[in-house]
Image (cartoon, rainbow, N blue to C red):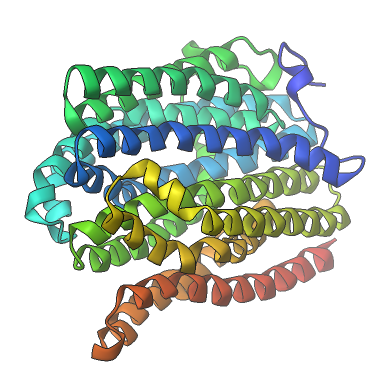
Length: 454
């Protein structure tokens, strides 16, 4: 039995009713994501209000690029989560401990790698994305500073993935609150008083990331049993690394492919000018709240499914997926409709420009209420990853999301009568629907294979 100071934060995912435990897991995670996004939104709001629309476009348009460069390693942290949850479900403390230390060192190495790539290639990549000249310098400065905080970001992601594996989503919430408050205060100080513009926003983000990483590391060091992190034991266990990569690398590749398609979409959006860029950036920031709210159930499905696989409770996985999909769809549809209804005042927080607000509403009317489809798709992916099938959803995403969007932009969008921003935005819900259907078929096939082997 695992014991320690964090025992009261753990969740037994293998017994009892699924819904209340999934909500106990997902709601703090949802609050963590929303709070993190609120603090990130503070970056955009402060820079948009006090530095102008070009600065707003510079910060906002970097979102898809940052995702492209970081999603590979954030995806690998999913492998850490799945493996740790499986060992926790099987009560294998020694294997759990090796997974923890391999994961934390992997976080450090990936963070250093991302810093080198992000700092060295920032301007060149932004040019390839057709970032307008009036925005390019500010966007480059923001990106370079932002990537100096990548090691802290990766340590936090891998550390919180370990905590999620045992059902602890509450303490990461507390740490994000502390780091986020620091982020907001530094934003206001650096931008309004020191007038550092986008550099101040980026610097505030880096400092807050370091705080959250320090807190999650301290938390793991104070634990006992298999989940405890001891710095002197920090090393790569080859067997555990291979198992982490077996699940996490396909997840990371999927994240990269997903972000790659978003970068292509962002490039198409950029071609419509700075006003559309600013409006789309503000709207996308609002939509991200919806996405991460539904994504909390994706994380829940992964952890619940992985623990039950470790405990050998295969039949319970169907109930986990059903509950996760229903919760994800309800949350996505509710928040999406609220975003559309209150879109103008929400966008007005980001910019006082009527043209920017109108451009943002053009996006939200199409995308916000369809995020329920994205939630359903992600819940299905979570179940597939939890049962150990990580390559399958990656291939499906390659074809259904990345491939379909690229084809859409290269064909339908190029038709003169359809060369509009509306057609760019429509590529999202169409790809979600197609990919969800393919994932559902893949899950049925995978479960039949698992049940036949038992």
